[in-house]
Length: 549
Image 1 (cartoon, one colour):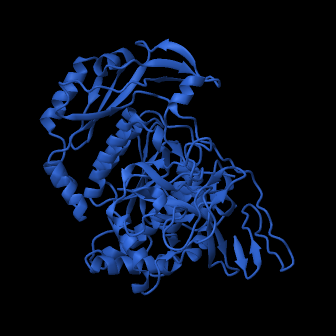
Image 2: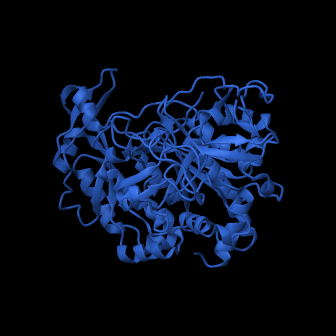
Image 3: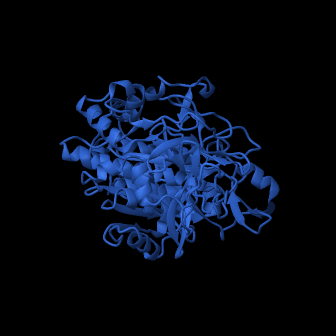
């Protein structure tokens, strides 16, 4: 959206941008927005579903078992100190005991499962018939069918880890096929690459030759990318390098089958490419269920092909099984220890990720204290295309908006104690940062051969990931370490803005996310706000040269 004094123009792609005279009203964007309400929790889905009976041998379940780390106290101290180790050092000091892991896999195979463990991995994948899972974990798995014909299996029982496995296994996920990660993309054209670079002061970095060279961004995704036609059409349209030498797609039968192309993966990759056009990208494709996603995420961290993770996935935190939260958090600890930066979308249903009929709640994994949670804004450009202002993205009529609020499970991390909100009740508070997410002021994309516009926090998240790729490139040019876990630095920048040559963030003080208002400094709607690319880069150099906070 462009604005100058009292003048406002909404940018619409697929046609020329509209210009309004002072006496004209703003022009509404064309195209329909597809806001997907969150699915009901598992217990509610079961109450509405037709019970098909006990799951027999024809029902295959996909268990993922979390393995215990060695020397957990030393690992916790390493993370608290902000120090990092190489993947090889992590495996030697903290990784699961390989002998116990192999013994556990053999025991599972003897119980009727196809069980695999790879050295360096934090999990064992165990696939087998439902009755074998019942016997192993002391649960009862049942089959159900929803009104739309969708079938799923589920158990509401708390799994019991067999004594033969307790020395190495701490938790398990995969006891239902209903709960899935959701993408956070809203499609209804939008800001083009030139607009994005100008608006967030990223052009100043590109003018200095920062283009992502030497950086790799890795992405867990659940919708397929069968070919590069859309991506290369986008690159050609905006005079960017072709995707072919920069993109790698990872698949594995153990990660399940991804959904048909829905535009999420295309959106993530096109936004990254317009900001960091020479950065490499590696996509890990998995099925949408938590168990398969855990396996792909574990392999993503094990491979460590890049130091930046961009994730546009999540689910209602209070309906995520504890096994998935435990497995994911353990793998994420390994990512942090190895110096990876992880940006996660907070969701597109405002503060009500679990639905308007439920209390405000966040989206997991954005609520983890060890990731950087990214919210969304509505943007207003100046007539010249530069920054004018932003507002928190919130649209009550269609119940959409940026995710934000307090976690139900995770305590307030040390880096947030200086800005803790009373409404958070001592829990982890999100988002940490934000950027353009409103589909009405979203990004130009090409999907299925058509030009379109996209928004959602899964647009703001890859934007932040690509920006940090530029920062990492500059840090390395200056002989400094890469960003790694970003939050300590981000909160230092926010709380020490007056000490910096220029503020690293655009403080967003208007708008709301359907439950929480934006305001000065950090807030539940937009965190610290959006990036000023050049100032952010300068602040990060000062932060690292100064030894941290």
